Image 1 (cartoon, rainbow, N blue to C red):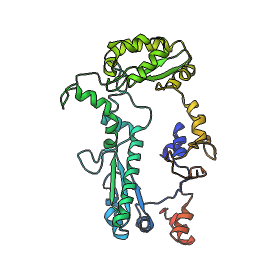
Image 2 (image 1 turned 120 degrees about the horizontal axis):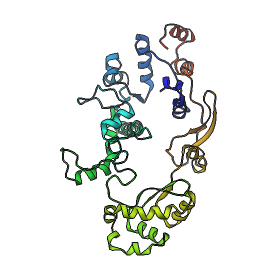
Image 3 (image 1 turned 90 degrees about the vertical axis):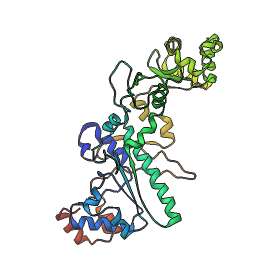
Image 4 (image 1 turned 90 degrees about the horizontal axis):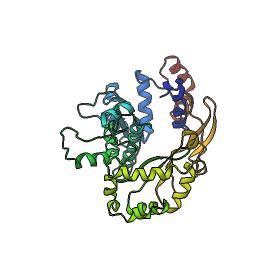
Amino acid sequence: MRQRTLIGGAALPFAMLNSNKQAVTLNLKTKRGREILIDMACRADVLLENFLPGKLDKLGIGYEVLREVNPRIIVASGSGYGSTGPYREYPAMDISIQAMSGAMAVTGFPDGPPTKIGPALCDFSCGVHLYGAVVTALYEREKTGHGQKVEVAMLDAIYFSLASSLGLYFASGNYGGAVNFPQRTGNTHSGKAAAPYSVYEASDGHIAILCTNNKHWISLTKVMGREELGLDPRFDTPKKRANLSHEVDKVVSHYAAKYKRDELFSILSPHHIPCAPVRDLAEITNDPHLHERGMLEWMDHPKYGRIAAARSPLRFENQELTQLKPSAELGEHNQEVYGEWLGISKEELERLKLEKVI
């Protein structure tokens, strides 16, 4: 990611994801570099890595080596396909996992091509699951006194997000055979289980409106002034409405077009009808809710300029929000980590730098 900070819009993601982190350099292809890593592992609780499976072992610093010097260490590996299985050595990026997992196949409209999901869903799903694995391993260590190796594969982690699409797939009688139904459902429910469930055009933008139960539907029909539809037996279950989604969407579209996006949101929300305006990136980065919660905070980054820096979404009781610090330059904390934490002398640090170990 650091290499991509030189390329246009890749700069902000690096800054956003690396606030309050220390940055060091270490050449693991050198003997001294590997020795320094082992020294750090002796003092660490967790080592996170996302090399191809087996890379650390080839370098001579795999889990078995690290466990010898620190039996309590957790080695956490994130990769595209995991350390086992026929795909284990395939290179992986978010978009390739989207393609391999089926996520891309179910994204887009029925008459269009498979489409990349906008957010880096596979990358972040893997990271969140890996966090869960690390915390679970740390909890188990409190009982056993021993660390362990944990891993999460991007392909594994993303599978659960396909639940609605898979529900429709298996309900259609598909058990390993050819897919015989449209996989891409556009803005409608992936499992064809609810309607209205889509994005509708307002007079000045778009708004998402969905009714996943009868209470939502009846409330919407009253707000729209179409109470008779709430009593119509053709629409009295989510599944029936989904089967007649074209008729339902026509009614909702006609109603939505009469209002501005935010006006419609303010009308529907008090009635507990699930809905939300479709907002752009300028709106979300300036969102008052996220800024008041401290999730976002404006920062004048020394390298990237004014950005909406983000904190972790995790919140704990009595937690005080930490002061956000800009993402560090490569090797900025070499002295602090290697000199002050590991106790390497200033003279050796200078030599290691000249020898391109750090």
